[in-house]
Image 1: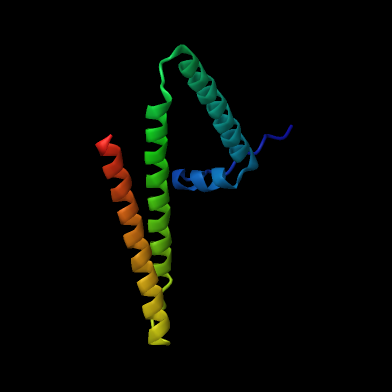
Image 2: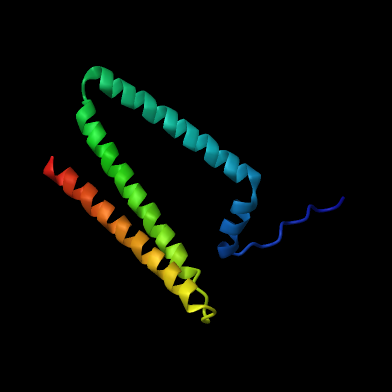
Length: 123
């Protein structure tokens, strides 16, 4: 009779890497997210039907979330543009243009966030 082989010891910090590579992990995440979305939709419809929620508050909240999400996306784009600047100067014009675009996108993101928050606080 042969004894079964024990699995190799896995260090604690290696576990997340193993999970991310397994297809079953992502299938479980997808299943749970879908179940959560379906549950949230049922609760949302029930709350609307029973009168616990009113559409103006939901619209304002959605506008706030979408505005902040868009400003966060713009800020990430600005960071990505700025981080791709070359370490050495090849042509000063290209670097200056990319830096100027990154700064303008960052300013647009901040002004959009300020406008959305100000509009939300007024109402």
